[in-house]
Image (tube, rainbow, N blue to C red; front, top):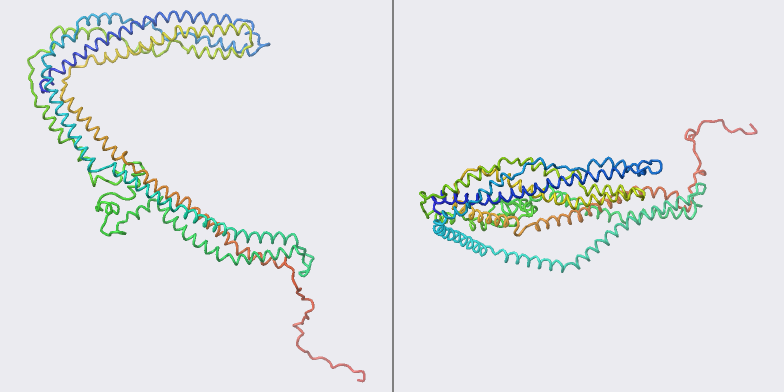
Length: 593
């Protein structure tokens, strides 16, 4: 479209056409407001009268003697007081009688609409139709060229990177790997049985030693007799001592096996916990995997050096895992833009520049043509002076937002019915039931139509409020081609950005890779390593306590077992260490001396 045509003709004509449509919609809105006000004012008077009758009738009913006899029926008396206190809520809330009618504004708008502004516009719009068609041809050709170029680039991209084929090959690889793993299930089950049997056997060793020790203590304690000599101890006591010594024997027999197993499991489980599990949680394990000089001392980063032979690329195992953890696409996680850059295939800046230049080549000078005669201008001026700005929209909206009544009649009727049901069956209850039916009838016959009228009034008044605020907006120069070009190119740019974002974050999401690592960590650390550490800890503590159990068992067995001979200490002669050397003494005395 010619630059001069954009600056002068179409903005003015479009604005006038929009104003003509706004006039008709304003007339409809004013008619709705006027009709709704008539309905609401009439309905408010009738509703106020009916609610007053209901209040009076309920008050008259509550004057029944049953409502004042607190001695015989205190519950009914209390309910009557509650109902009487709530009667003040049965009144109207919104006062539509204070709202002025919009009939003067409606009459002015009808007078303005007697002149059809659209006919005046079309009389001036016809000379430009042929030129506009020429411009549209150029626009269509340019846009079609843009679409064809983008389609060719997308087709070229799909051939360079066959996504479907790559995903199919990867799926086949996963299926084959799963089938091979299933072939080893019987061997895995057999090894798991051996593991289970070995653990049970080790636990049985500890249980066997504990069983002999506990039985020995039990029998020895029950059969012990402090008055019996070692050779005359009872059978139960002797059995207890024998079992204690058997526990000592099994302790020596199994201790070396237990210590060896505890040592092996401790070395394996402890190192795996520190070097693998803890390092995985602190991300230190990824730093080890990202160490380049383990494979090639000249590499800066291991993963891009191994995949792309470019170690300078900012791609690490930790960043790959973190990106996959966020469920991003494999394109972004592995930096596949190193292999193929989607931006180069979907770059519209080059060929959109040619389309814009083509759209700017058509030039038609229409400066000397009058677009709107005096009659049309007068029509617009009369509409702007119709008095729409004099309508106080806030007052209307304030009354609409209040609601019809101070309380919802249905809710009030339900509450009143609930209180009435608590009363004793009598004429008072029947009368209140009749008033409840009257309230529901008032709601269905009067409240609902008034609420519908209020809704229509609310919508129409809000439209008039918007129209009044937009009415004084000055005439602006709108360039049709500058609207079409950025809009269409913007749509394509938006679509291309969506394609890029989808490819980076939604297509081929690499969440399964992080799930594989997380599953391996859970299986290895939570199930395997933690179980191993718990097992060696328990087994090691049990093995450690074998030593005091051996000492205690040997000490106690001496007092429980029956001896073949007794140790005698009374027949051994005692020597006086002070008199063991000979001393001088008088010779023996003889009779004949």
